[in-house]
Length: 208
Image (cartoon, rainbow, N blue to C red; front, side):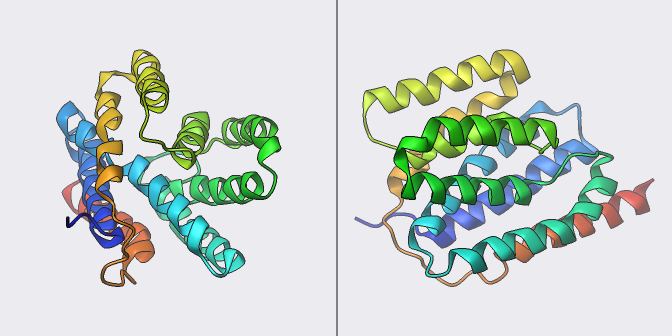
């Protein structure tokens, strides 16, 4: 039975991210654009967990995330008028957490708490929410307990951050369709992040 490849998931993650950012910049009154955007972040995390599990060079993977995060940061701050750290730093911290937990499973609680504190103190874009998602997706299972934890967490989070967060609850349905195949190489994927931010910034400046 055919399913989604990593390439398909990257396309969905990239497109829904663009929709989300268009909503933030140009149509902040349209919640449905932000709701579509809630699909993106869990997919980025899923791809991160797959990458951490299968990469042959964890240091190169982390260096690429860090460099792209540094390149993206000034564009991100100007585009959205924020002092937060962009998503690539969240993914880099997540990569460190995933690898530490893989090597020392008993450290999952202190690692999770430490990472959550780091994201809040340093003002990461997704904060402790992102850390919890990384650990939940790391232990994704097709059982009732996992789905209850995922759904319950997002119901609580929606009460705090807004109901537009709720579409994230169904994103694991896409995980189920993943068949473990890479598909075409997506050399554009990480460069897409700073690239699309730069294009949106230019568009916003031209419209202002």
